[in-house]
Image 1 (cartoon, rainbow, N blue to C red):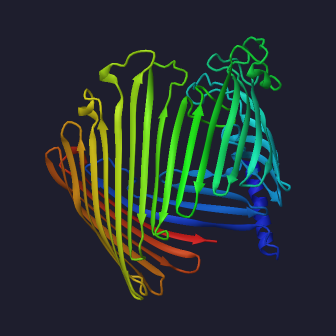
Image 2: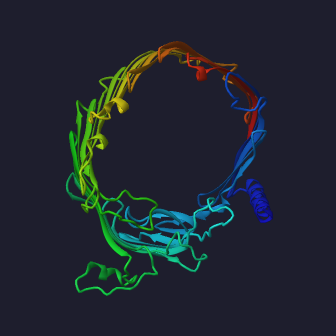
Image 3: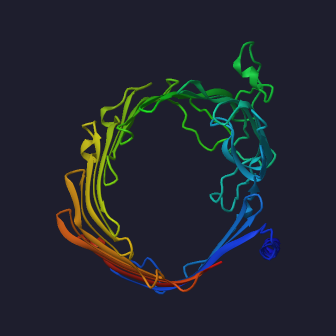
Length: 548
């Protein structure tokens, strides 16, 4: 902590010096906010302190080269918190076509090799002309031993170090890259632990983006991963022609070594009116790379995505349809298949009128694998979602009138008759809104009528409907901003009638260029007819803020 405070003083002293010099190399910015409030509740357990108060602040130190050091703190009777970035601090300065990485960094060379995993170390990326070269080295995981007194506090892990290399040729939009990642655990970095085993991984990948012919693009990401799940396992000889031999330059083959592959590719065509993209993805079961945190493996999918741009871009239509399945190795008890479809239609014939329609459909089903599926447990569902938004705007030099209508429908259909009565549900929502704005004075008002109904399993229905109104205004040469809103929603659920009343008021006043006062009030009254949903809440807060 002492070293941190000394470092902070050093940064602040440099910032003050820089502000007094002409170079302005270091910039200091931030703010401080103080607040005090009140809270009362009846009918439920209090969700806040009766008289909440606190102090919050933030400081950001901007160093040359785009380096930013943010600090923040919160103090009050609700707890104290201090955050600073030096637990994981890193820089990536650039100069022309060169970039250097140092400290904690997350770099992406390709989706299947080094793909954003945080490491502590260094590296570089250079792009002189069309040459694309990059390399990083560092610690990917730190050693964590099990705490026998608190075994659930942290998961044990070995110290893991590794490197990644990228070699390619081309431009930012047309290139071919060859990627390599090699990482391994140090089995001596922690005390022996039977719950985990030291692992090793080598991944070789190819990434490419380029234009085949005019208007036709091609994308490719492919990789092979040799993953040893226990480096203490016995070494094994390899036969001639084994694909794993290509990886033995970087790691030995052992009984726990598995070679898996991943591939995703796409071909697209685009002109002024029509576009089409075809995508294919296949990831082997258990595919894994130490350069990424998570992969969805054991999957193959096909997707077609057309698009249309009509009527001089006034009408746009986009859609996609894909199918997906797992159990590629045919070793699961059941195979799961998915069908995903979506479409978006946007029609904007003028600045005053617009219509948006969205549709999505997600289906999932199971087929027998190694074992037959019991009908009462078979998964077969379909999720349907529809949304429409209509808007109409009347505007002149002084006022604006905006009308919107939004309708949504969501439906879960269970295709298994044995489970449908426990899972099927529907939800519909309608919102009709009006917004009024005086462009010169800044006065605004809005009103919304909403209706929501939900059909739950076993013939249960929940409905909420009612109005919401609000106003906002700017006064005193735009120094004072005030707003208020309120809603009164009727509800029906489980044979009971009730209502929910919600109101709020806000005001903020600009004392000077960098100082402000704020006032917030809120009230909630819930009486839905259900015993655990009958309560009142009152909140209020007065705040002062200063920025620099």
